[in-house]
Length: 220
Image (cartoon, rainbow, N blue to C red; front, top):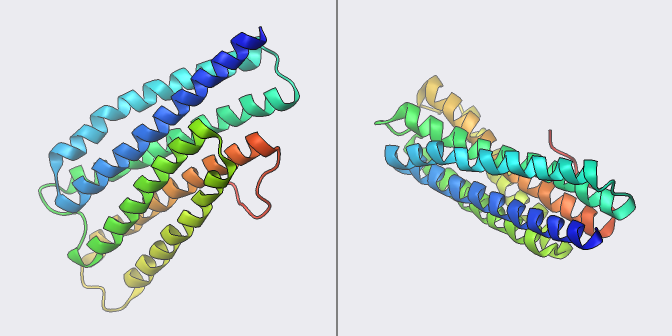
């Protein structure tokens, strides 16, 4: 039974990594669709989200089956519960990439972003995609030091988000209310994507060490 449990957990860890990788790839394409007003890329993200949702559902079922059938205790219980929570974080990452693509599609053939903020979102997209790749890596390697790096990367995302908000509040903003609303929502999507990647890192650290980073705040 122990061998079977370990095999099932290893398979689930690999699946979680695949899911995080798909979420990161989705955010990459969503960002390009946003910056280039590329409807084809936006539609790809939207249609391929079904694959992420399918993996999410399957991952949840496997995790709950382990909880119900293997009756894990102590460290094993921590592992299964952390896995269930990680599934939720990856699900939100995929959904946030989907939201970005839907904004790009809604504004097509126009650009959703004023040219003045393109640089912000290009960099926020780069950071988000990098964090998605790191989340995949730590889910597969269970490396707590690499997991802690996600929190450092998130600081750059938070800094960009703060600067973007300052730009929106400037009295010289000349791009209208609709653009301001889109930029506000999109900035929030990228920030939350990064937050969920950080949360994955926190959960991996907890899974390996049994303790959460002391100064980390969980996302909702």
